[in-house]
Length: 65
Image (cartoon, helix red, strand yellow):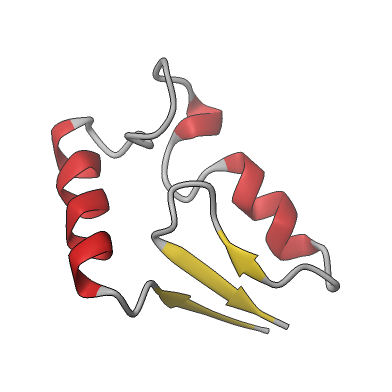
C-alpha cells in the first residue's frame, strides 16, 4: 500500500489552502467534526480496505494497492 499526494499540484495546493483556512477540516465537507479532520475518517476506512485504490473525497491523497 502506498499513499501519495495528488500529483496535480494545482489541485493539491487548492485543497491545502482550504484545509489551512478551515483549521485542518476538509474543505469539501459541511461542518467541523473529528470525522472530517484531514485525513478524514472516510479515507481512513478506505485505506483499511485492501481492495480500494483511488482518491480521497477531496482528491488530496491517492491510495495505491
